[in-house]
Image 1 (spheres, rainbow, N blue to C red):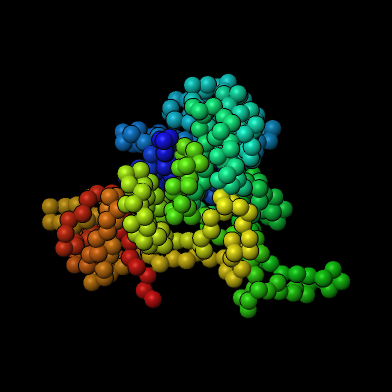
Image 2 (image 1 turned 90 degrees about the vertical axis):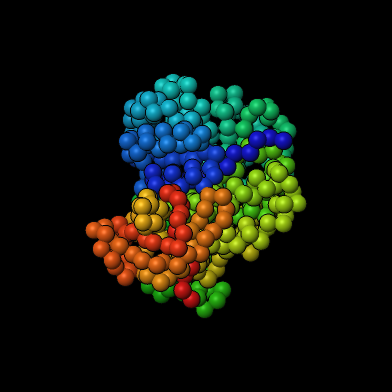
Length: 409
């Protein structure tokens, strides 16, 4: 059996550390340029250096995205960026554009290259083409079925790696190559500036009646005709493994540390349980499903893995996420009196119950016994985002644990 890598996104240093502590084998991040998530916080050179050091200290790999579809201007500039990355020693670069690929191989040939899903690799000849150019891994296009992935595995060198998205948002366009955002707003999705027009609500207008907008309706709420459900393969780990996939990739470089920690921890446990005992994996299925449901999510789909999606994969009545839990913060420190320091993300108060997430998969439901502000003065609530707050529970937690609260119904 091939060794399975759990590959997790990180939008910032805080999220990277959460991914590492909650079970990632590798994380993928973007710098301030040349990645496809320009609206994520992304990493400054200093944060990237610290993130790579932190991950390597914990035995976790770091891959850096440079997967834009480059124009001449970017090709002229990208050499300097690769020189900076060469000094930082990431474990791989994620690239889609052949011109960017050539620049990377020339400037930092010692850094492995992974071919992004943006390169639209849908057959084994394309995979072998990239391997002959020197790529170590190809990320499969999201339009592939498990049967097609198995066939690719049978036709490529054994040592070459296949990476596949297994969880997160889906794109309406072929492997993310979308022109809608650029057309509507001038912000190019292929340059990292997507405005996500696939999530918008659309109307119909007859050409001789300008200004008269006719609703496109499935229900009274209207229809979001491009709005796909979210991919979730937590129920299908055995099929993913049997297909010969090397890396299970989570989508979400715009997500919070809470989301990343919760999804990482759940997939980590599911993969490890299955590898230890298929019976144990099946026995814990309700746990995996319940933990995934505690993240923000849209209706789930299995994407293209079992054939082309039908109308059930679309969400017709809304573009918003389902959100059952609120992010409270990450434990930064614990003092001698048992108070836990956090930088508060959302309001909470003395007397409320908070759920603490342990990296091993367990949860603690704890009552907030007391709060102190940054001056160590007693307060009844924590209303200000990013405020330094000290919390006392009935038990002591550990630094790095994430705190969340169930949404009040």
